Image (cartoon, rainbow, N blue to C red; front, side, top):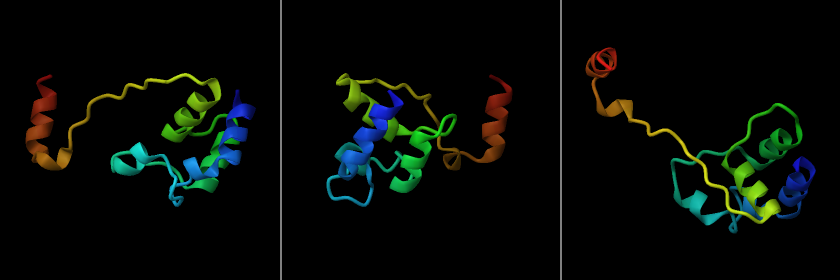
Length: 93
C-alpha cells in the first residue's frame, strides 16, 4: 500500500503540491487544513513511522478507489475566551 501511495503521489504531483494550480481544491479552500510542503510530504510518505496528513488520506483513497472518512475532535478557538474563564470551565468538567 505504501509503495502504491508513493507512486500515486509522485506521478500526480499536481494534486498534492500546494503550489500547483491543480492542487486538490477542497484543501486549497479550507484554511484550517495545514499540510506539508510537497518535498516534505513525499519524504514523510516513504519513511516508516513518520507523520501523515490529509494528503496521505487523499492519496490512499485514490489508490484504493474508495472514499475515506476521517473524524476529528471539535476544537474551540482559545483566543475567543479569556484564559481564566477557559481554565475555570475545564476544571468543572
